[in-house]
Image (tube, rainbow, N blue to C red; front, side, top):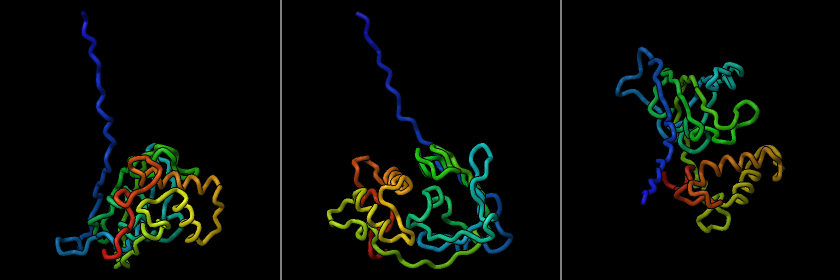
Amino acid sequence: MDQEVKETKEPEKKPDLKIEVVSLPEKGCDKDARKSQRLDILSMKYTGFLENGTKFESTDDHNQEFSFQLGVGQVIQGWERGMLDMCVGEKRKLTVPPHLAYGDIGAGERIPPAATLIFECELVKIDNGPKPTNVFNEIDADKDGFITRKEVSEFLIKHSEDKIEPESEEHQKVLDNIFLHEDKDKDGQISKEEFSGPKHDEL
């Protein structure tokens, strides 16, 4: 009797973030220099490209730097990881795979689904950032230890400066993107362990 041999495929390994240090400042980047860390406010110059070389965003187009707080979920995961331990004046090139960027959904008209993004970045300034509040508890309205899609939606609507239509396609895409990255086990809700934003009052 012939024995049937079944081939088992190993799970496809996702590409990791690629960080290239393009240049360092002549002074101010030695071992004692201040380097970016979680909760810092960073001011950046950057230009973003698709893999085919198409530019989709640049601070040069707006004549102002982009500022954000590192480590609190304000930017894509590729930036959260790729901007750590930078000194002022350092330039990096980040190649960000889809699962650390905008996933299978994309973002707006400029970033298609499943896009690998390339960023040319320069750190201009580091400031001390405030300690974030426990965002998980703020979103978790019924305090059951899990965040539902409805709770995330209500939180975004409450804290947005602009009026949000709950059923709008744009708002639903934002929710889709959040759950793509945060709902690791795909059970339709986000646990405290899965949540990547601030979830402790003392940090």
